[in-house]
Each structure stands twice: as structure tokens, then as C-alpha cells.
Image (tube, rainbow, N blue to C red; front, side):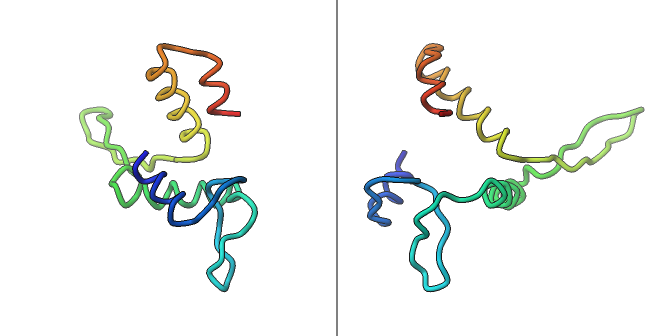
Length: 98
């Protein structure tokens, strides 16, 4: 929550989408990031954290595979975190996922 609060303080956002793109002049756009933009940010961050590949054993060999990250991965992770934090409160999970 620290990073989120820092973003909200710095951006001055009071309402509307939290995650937005920037206009060419550096101002925040009034609309939310597109699903494509979220996917690209997730892929970039996963790669930077070393999460873009996985190594598995097949037939006695180590195989390296690309991991596909997308919006569903993010929604699922948020739903799991909210469920764990609220002892499985279904309404809280629904509200978080809107």
C-alpha cells in the first residue's frame, strides 16, 4: 500500500481510474490504462524480476520455457490476496475485482 499511497499523493488523483497513461506533454490521461498497456507493463516487470521464464525437467533434461503473463494473472493474484486477507469474504473479492 505504500507505493499506491505515494502514487496517489504524487499524482493528486481524487477520483476516477488510479492507473492511467501519460499524454505527450507529461500530463496524466483522464482514462484508465488499456488492457494491452497493462499486459505490456506486466510482461516488462516480470522480465525485470526474472519471472519471464521457467525451468522444468522433461525426460531427464532441464527445459527453459517462456512464461505468458497477462491481465488474468493479475486479477487472479489480487483475488487470492483479498481472499486470504479477509478469510474468504466473497463480497470483498467481488468488490476488488469489480
